[in-house]
Length: 113
Length: 119
Image (tube, rainbow over all chains, first blue to last red):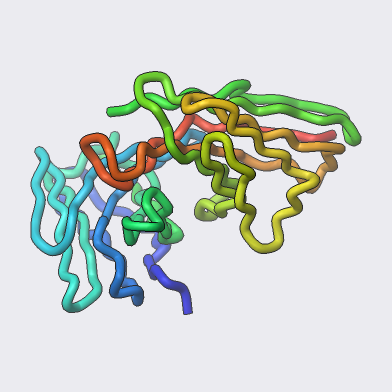
């Protein structure tokens, strides 16, 4: 079993829809949680960063972390065609493993006009 | 956010030649840099972790003599694919982190990637 599980999709939604992306994990030592967006043939770019449990909102994006359930989510409101990309969740322990993240396989999202 | 550059963005070479890829952190000191390989429609596969001034730590199954990594300074790491073969064709991405310092602890900032094609 992988340490981080992410549904690869593909996920296709109409413009304006609310998108929910999720990851589950098994390592209880993870305390930093990130979401990256990767456009085709480009490097991933950091979208959201959360430490420990809770919610974080940034514009149309909301990241949720539930450490008790080992479950994280990314919500995209009012989705736009420009949101079409692959979304990768990532998590790290910090401490002696500072900087080393474990990535999900990515979910491919298409937002249709 | 922090900026990481990679050069070249695309390279085509003949089988048997060596290719060097550079990764630079432009506006922060990267205590650690990572090298990934990504196949089409697949996730990132970590190849190695490199700390400035130390030997790189390679993931299981990655040949250290084939993929030479040098982390000469806090802003530069290089990956050299030696005696490249067609099966080495892939998208190589580096990332850099400042570890526990900086605004986002443990966050990796990625370069734009290098597409290597070996003929």
